[in-house]
Image 1 (cartoon, rainbow, N blue to C red):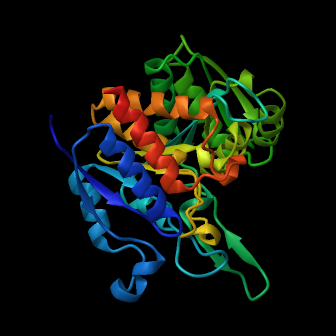
Image 2 (tube, rainbow, N blue to C red; image 1 turned 90 degrees about the vertical axis):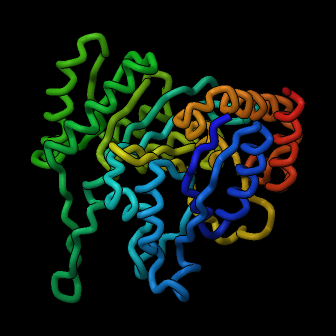
Length: 337
């Protein structure tokens, strides 16, 4: 069996706990990975002088694949989001966020299976903002044709490869006629190259309403950075919460797999966190590495676990800890042989 070399960033907050749980599950599936562990986040500032040491960037560039736990982003002040910096430094232009119901999980809807493709490098996340005097702040929304066409082509290629029948562009071009207008025009242009895929567009506020009324009308949504971020969290709510939402950041040379949720510092170290989103992200990573059999076994074990509904974490109404859930999954996988 080949051994893959993968960068591992455990994150902060609940990151170390859900990372340990995920590694236990991967090991139980028999996958041999040579983990290159690197540290990032607020806990390394005192020693390294930065929350994102250059060694993290270099490791990801060298290995091409990374698994990352959540990293804390200060609100309103402090250092810039490490997640955003990683995506821009490594040109991880596509943020793929699959949203799929798990059996046995109580949620607003059943049989949800949709994907959000989020442009990952520009929009308001470009970080171009400044104060105008002392009583006003200005943020600049950057939308380029190159990035818009690139994410659109990624979305349609993904739809073709994975049997998605419909692509919906999300925008606010009725108000933001130049920036979102450029995004929408770019997606429409690319859509003409894919006549087998149904295409439509929807204004973002209407998209939010339609998702909570009838999410089954959507298949794959492609959106600029901010809308994709917000709507993917909304969609996680449709299937039971952020604890069940995986994420994949894809670039030309590097792919970084991480849960959608944050670092939840309020429950850090308390053995309360749900590791499912991190495990699901790792499943996608294993497929990326060509370890499809192991990925399928972990996914099957996870589905069986939730179908039984006995060992649920607190976010889903249970009282099972992170470590106990991981051990139960590892034991189930081992029994599969």
